[in-house]
Image 1 (tube, helix red, strand yellow):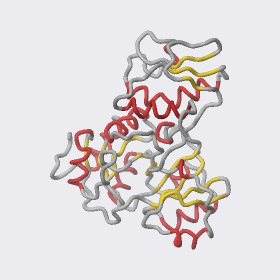
Image 2 (image 1 turned 30 degrees about the horizontal axis):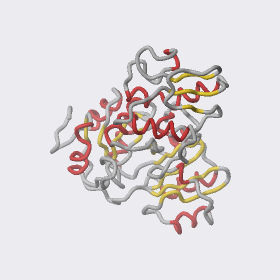
Image 3 (image 1 turned 60 degrees about the horizontal axis):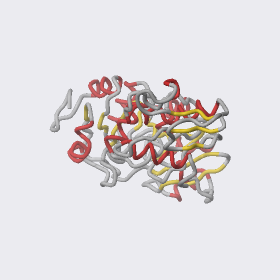
Image 4 (image 1 turned 90 degrees about the vertical axis):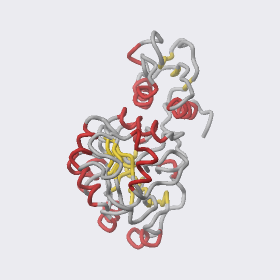
Length: 312
C-alpha cells in the first residue's frame, strides 16, 4: 500500500490524497473497519463492490464529519435532527430523503431516492473525512460473507490488496455495525439493530413504525430503483421504440452504452445513471446487452434482473 505498510498504516494526509485520486482506503470507525471511497465517485464506489466481491449493489452509508454536513446531503425533519443530536458522533445511521444526489452517487445509494448518513464516533475517521471535505462511503473492510474486521491487521488481511492506503485507528470500540433507522414519509423505522437499542431510539422519537423499509438499509436485501419503462435483458438489438444500453465495442449508440470498451467497473459506475437517463426519454422499453456474469458482472446482472422484474 503506497504511503504506509501493514505495520504502521498511512497518515491522515496520505489517506486524503488516496481518496482524492479515486483510491480505496481502509478507515477505522468505532463500529468496524471500513473500506472507504469518495461517495461522489461512481467508479471508486464500483471498486469497493469489486474488492469485497459483494453480490448485490446494496445502498452504502455516507460518512460525514458532522451533522451540518449530513444535512447538506440529506433532508432531515425534526425527528431525524433529534436522533442526530442524541447519538452523533456515534454508531447510528439515519436514512432520509436525499438532498444532494451528486455528493452521494446513484451507485452508492443503489438508485434510491433516500440516502444513509452517519457521523462516526471515531475521531481519526472524522479527521480524515473532514480533511477530505466530502462524504465517503465505507462498508465493512471484509470480503463478502466473511466477518467484519475490528482490528487493523484483520482489515488489511481482508481487503488490503485493493486499498491504496490503510489508516490504523486501533481496535474498534463497538465491534458491530451501526444501528440503522429510517426517517421517511413521516415514519421512523428500525432497519438494522446495533449497539444503540430500540428503547434508546424510542426514548427520543416515540414508538417506531413496524411496516418495514428494509430495502433502504445497508446490509439488507435491496429492492433497487426500477424505471417506468419495461426492461429487457440479454438483448442483441433494440426493438422499435426501445433504447439499447450497450456493452462492449460497436454495440448500439455510444451515448447509451454502459461501457463501450466492455469494462465491468465502468458499467457498474454507469448503470443507475443510464437507466434513469433512458427512462427520461419515455421509450417503449429499455433493452440491455448481455453483460458477463463474472466479478462485478454478477452484481450488474442481479440489478438488471430486478429492474426487469425477475426477482423481488
